[in-house]
Image (cartoon, rainbow, N blue to C red; front, top):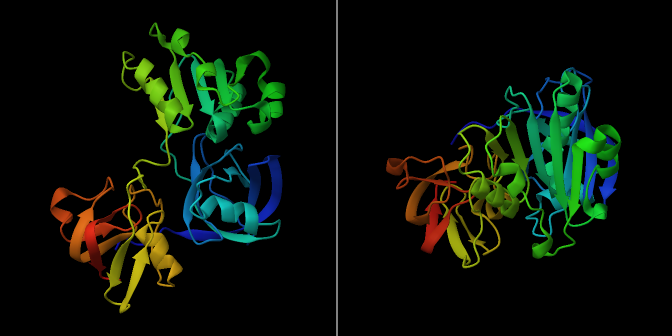
Length: 316
């Protein structure tokens, strides 16, 4: 199994409600030590009160930070991570947090188009602040269901004025923002997009004729963790001498953790390899993007993969 990521203790210095479903958390080092600087687009991995590892984009200036500021949406289909952040954290609470990482970095361009949907505004807000400081031209298109659902909307309006386009579709698919005019002709700009899958799918579809590297996306869910036809199955944990049931709406990792068996994880999206476990027996539906083909008969990523049929035996 891959070694665990390095975590440090941080306390919640501030908890602020941005919308009925989104809270902002300002985290400070519990020991008062300096924090690792970061560039806009960076994220941190947080061990949530439920024990789940979740990635959250950083909102604040990372040049010389004394806090890591994140905004967390209480997802209606939460598997325990985001809901525990909202329910179990108060100012003064302590969390384990990894150093910032960044796979959504701003490239050098003459101009920028920043596109956000819902909670996807978090890295976009950080980018806009950085571009303003550097004096570079940009536009933001911020889509949400309503103004009341749009985190940081008033702050964005005050900071960026006419550089911000805010669009609210009121939940009507026919009222979605029309991006075509921004992409019909190839422009000498870089585009950065973060938001729900339908938004990113739309931008990918209408920007297919643009040069590679001009349109960039941030997505913390690189694989499909759950599917409508998923069914419950049993997993035998060889070292722990116990058998657990994995419900259809839960991962092996979550079920193992709920049973009190120590586990190692990081991204919990099938992309990092931290939860790699030895497979002893069973037919696996591999859903990760890490394992080589020759590894799949003897290994499993328990954060996303499931049994195709029957049960599994894992060396845990």
